[in-house]
Amino acid sequence: MTAFHIETTVSSDGSLLLKRIPHLAGHTVEVIIKDKSSKKSVSGKYPLHGSVKHYDRPFEGVAEKDWEVYK
Image (cartoon, rainbow, N blue to C red; front, side):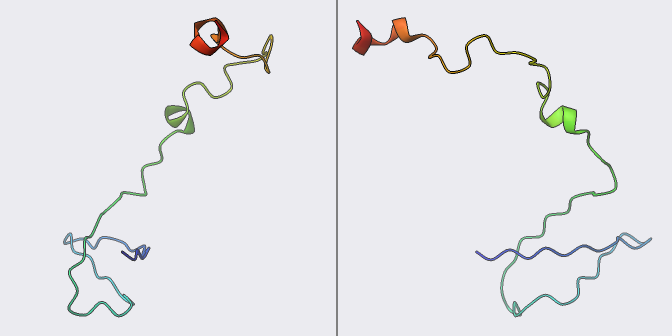
């Protein structure tokens, strides 16, 4: 499957005109519409970003006592 990225503006009557679509005449395609005018905050995507200030032992393993191989 080949993907093409085209940005355009919806006209006042709610229609879209897509130009310069390469060599797809007769092919079945899927069209996904994403509203780019509303900006989402980055903090919503990464809610913990910037919350950790210090690691006590950053290179030590976690839950090593629970592994069978270490018993």
